[in-house]
Image (tube, rainbow, N blue to C red; front, side, top):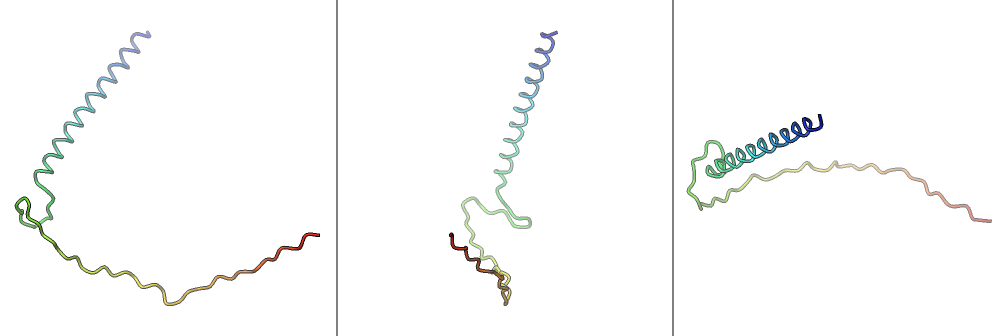
Length: 83
C-alpha cells in the first residue's frame, strides 16, 4: 500500500514538473513574439528600429484645494499638581 502511494505521488510531481516546463516554454515564445513586434499604439505606422520620437503630453490639471478650511476644536487639559 505504501508503495502505491509513493508511485502516485511521484507521478503527480512528474506531471506537475512537465506542465510547468511546457508553460515556461510557451511564455518564452509569447515574449519573443511580443518583443519582435515592439511596443506600438494602435493605428500608428511601424517605425524603424532606433527611431526616436519625443511627444509632448497635455498639461495635467489637478483639482484645486477647497477655498475654505475647517478648524478642529480642542481643549487644553492641565495635569493636577501632585501632593
